[in-house]
Image 1 (cartoon, protein in one colour):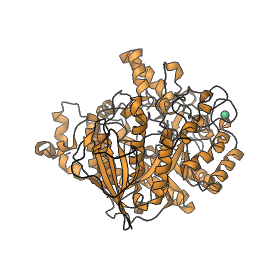
Image 2 (tube, helix red, strand yellow):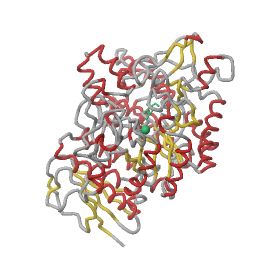
Image 3 (cartoon, rainbow, N blue to C red):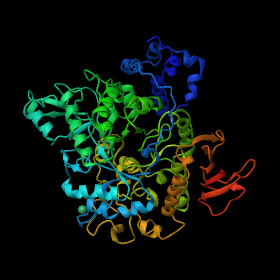
Length: 620
Ligand code: GLC
Ligand code: CA
């Protein structure tokens, strides 16, 4: 309690925590350099804040700081690995391609589109969950880990998918959802039926709930009549959190993972994996953080006491023997914690997804606002300089949980394609591994929903019913519209045909603007966004400097300009981007060398709106 702010900032985990709090408040990190603020002692903060900072918050900061882990100092030696070179593509199967006219995408549909992915140059597919599930959260609520969801097909279809991918030289990443299972999973049913039996302790049951809230609204506890106890669910009421403290839980999970690896899958994306270690006794969360973040309890478990240990165990016993690759979904984790999770020598995860670049400071997914790409630049500058020398960065703008990036940055239809190309340039030339979400390569934008009835997502419904109590239905709907995960879940736009060629039946969720945006038209057009993605992916493969080369960012203080060099022993590439809608005068000279690709047809003395180009300035 007598530590000073500045001391906390010097501790890697402390630095992440302070950054996170400042980000939420929309304040600058420079504040900490302020002598007076820097010298404040933790214990005083509670007093000075007139109770706005509670004891719980300070205690969870202290316990995180005392985990005593130190960040490895060694830079990565740029060891080669397929997943550093690969371009990944995320398939959300429900919305990708329907083969049988029931309106729901499926595995045979996906198989029929593998040549499309090959043509784009994709190396690996991350497949959102396809396991048996009652679909309360579209497959993220698993009922049977070793069965394929009937709507999506059969295990034979799955085996064929895997072999067809491998035939084309592509790899398959499965989604591993092991923070929770469906309440319809055998384990949970057994736990309820026989509280003293083998499964009685597989989940968290308590007489009295604590104050944690669910990400989808309301308390994180559901009363289970048969047990006369409450069970924990951080997500929907049907997604019950597994108790990783129980060794049998961990062994069962490892068995299941090995079962899929035996089939030949190449790796996993680990769903909310940083939430698996809950602190002993499940202490209440801080109300202050709860208000700030919109959910209570998160600071107690988002980097739990045994997280690193569990990850190491999982890697050692399940992934490593098969050479399987892992990328963890790790919401809320900052740079330093991410290093602890992904530094090569620590043998926990290969890569991680953090999400702090998806909204600008002080904003949440549900705010309607314009995303300023200058924030993306500052975020990336920080990560390129202090993360990627140590670990491999994941590069993404979109997934099935977030609105489309083009919609966030600029809704003006006139700049849609230019902007899409700018985003592509940054994603494929910064240092890291790109993950493209289905439809991003053709510039798909947010869905066009007119009422709550048109939405499908459990998260949107939960938030809506919570919000309408306080701000009324209309305002609540507008917030949901801005942030709904359904924005990115509308069907893939294959062609101008009815329903965008996604299904012959009635799609499970409304389709988007297929007349102006579809794969078929774009594949036949050399100047399209799709062709641009294909060319950039090819360029990335041709120039290893874009993969393993070092990165040097220039013009750091110039607003709207994002420029950087990528170099290895053989060549130097130069990337030049205009992040805004105005012409920018190039101070100094034009880039030298040869232009390799650009979203404008010529060069000009100005950098034009959203202009982005890649140059080669030194070649062998
Ligand atoms: C992850 C998934 C999201 C899901 C949640 C619970 O964030 O990406 O879709 O709802 O975990 O499994
Ligand atoms: Ca189908």
